[in-house]
Length: 449
Image 1 (cartoon, helix red, strand yellow):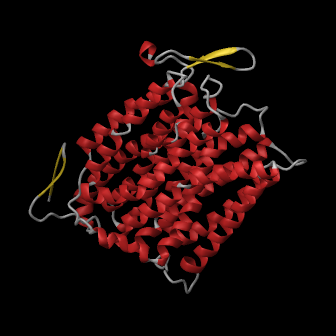
Image 2: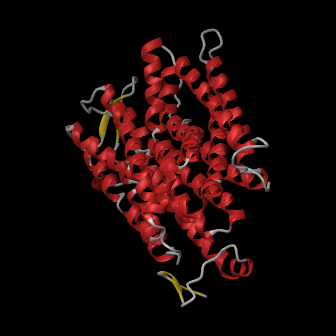
Image 3: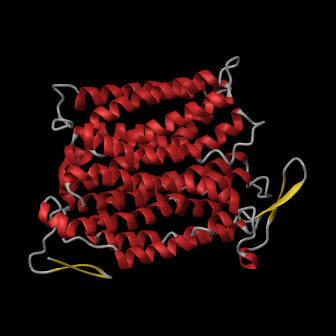
């Protein structure tokens, strides 16, 4: 039996937690699980916002007087993705030993270091680039929180509800990308912290000059970090579950399906985070005469909303079926983008709507693919599998913008990069169909759907 207090779950000698036990779930488990889910969402949303602050701040560094090259500015956008990818595997395993409450508190409160550091660095246009690189890397710690959060939350819910729960957790957490891209352009134009926020920078708008406080784009996240970290400390629980041995979790490296699922996760989450980083630059490059900075958040918003939808649909119809359909829709979105960037058919509206379709379908695929992990790997290996797949998938935040940049440099446009993505998505569709969806597939993910 559980007794709830402000510090978490206290168990008696039975040390019992089984959400698949219907009486236990209805009487106690559901309340505990939902409380932990919503606190996790708050912390994950903030972590994603910190992870992606450079996607907006980098756009105005040079205009604000920082003596950095264009390549250096792009690198500041890419570095957090690399850091987030590298730490995700360790975060997913670490949470299984310390517990959801302890890990969420520690991994959230540490984000104060990069946001205060970035804010301080942006108050001085003479800040060395090396300092900015270190701070950008520390922002990447926010990306690691996703793996630990997803590995933790799934254990709170019964099997038939895990897809929806993980979809809601990941989807609303992913909203942090959209939130950052919506809020930062607003707060940097207002001296909301007064003298405590430091002096503004001056930028040339083409029609004159204006003052901006770029540091506000970092300082603004300190408040939710503190609030939600404390909420985790006093409101979340460390479940009384058996601690999996590291050796048992590392067995996933011997599984063929670990690498197949990693390919699929790159297709879903890698696309989401990569396009989120590249979308502002692509809009600015393809349609420089149109002011789009207040529109870029819509793509990540649809992707984040699509994730819980994908989890729900996967619970209802099967993760493989939903994922296969969505990757086909993603191909349609890419083909639309290719069509609307060509001379003669170039259209901002067509380009923008095709990208929104790509974001939405990718978000749904992200949620549906995630539900396949517990079925394929089981409870002991799933945390490590999720950590490895999400770590490699997060590299999409670095490689997708890089491929776009390479395509522009080599050919003068983005069509080559988009064609590469089409081929990759078709490969992913074949993998889903052959290994998980067809009648004689090796693993019948949708057998009971």
